[in-house]
Length: 498
Image (tube, rainbow, N blue to C red; front, side):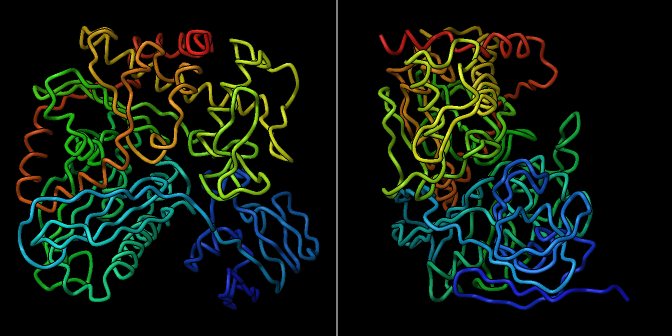
């Protein structure tokens, strides 16, 4: 019988005493116990966000055992070597965008619309008879303990146990959000969900493994209605469930839902729709149809794998002016740097010629405020991310035979797009400076689209829209590769700051 050690875990006001195997890392142990830990890199030791406070004997990644006395350490790098205590920080003050719309009244009872983002989850409760939104709630996706990007989660879901863990985590989270919004969840008669194709697979308990390898074919494109009882036991006995339809492995129900709720799918003018996150999904078109694609932007926009990076939470630098003055979410001393602040910082350093057009900094790092700094490696991570988004835009335009002048509007979706300073995004070349005056944020368009999917009219519109969506695979596209290399430079900032 395997020896285990007694570990007392404290998070906020809750304390648990559990048995931990010395063969598993603290991160794995905490995840198995259902204790939320921020680990955007999935436990590879690169994001530096899974820190816990340890007391007792622990073995590090190099095999060295020592006694910790209330010291911080990465939970993915330690294994218990004796009884001990671990304190896990709460993710207090995380910003989750949960803006809502009213929908056409249809049906009886309550409806629950859910946006399962890779980073965040937002839920909306509706009175189906009136179409009025009764409340909204959001929080960080509980699956982030297994990695902040879809590739990390695909890898973890390769085993039946891993898939079950991710499935159960998101279903439990949705159940708890529903209970927070409605004291009597038995009155919920319809549930609609929008998410990228991987998130919808994990929710449904389907393996996303085939999405992670060429030809990136999903097991399902969803868009069907079924009994909710196969997923939840807390809603009305006759509750129905609908997963918004996907276009391809990396253009999912969050994009079709966003195209619907933003009005892009009914527009006459040419619209460029962009949802920027760990994947940069985008679509170009109008009411006659869209061409879509997805780029692997990486986690930099979410603050992951950035030296002082974090999600948008209290204490994070969210904005940097051209005079290098910083704005901190919630006020007080700066503790980290979130995605919008990262883009602002690089734009400001370009303006002050501290970074050149190749991304080279004069010094190893630049201190923004207090102990929060930007490193040369951070700049390179942002370069890779912004080049992927820009190259996707350029490729869609070229494949469609269009130019910047043909675009009537650019719609930025999601929480990141809502907080992003457009001038900075254009200054670093993530968005073309020529389109600056045509860009606007549409907020959580996926959540709003999920709300529309609570109605028969909305579901019918989604089916019609999806049938008119084409897909361009970029991973094997020479055109995309050429555009990507060209987009690496920071050579357009003067067009924005003149």
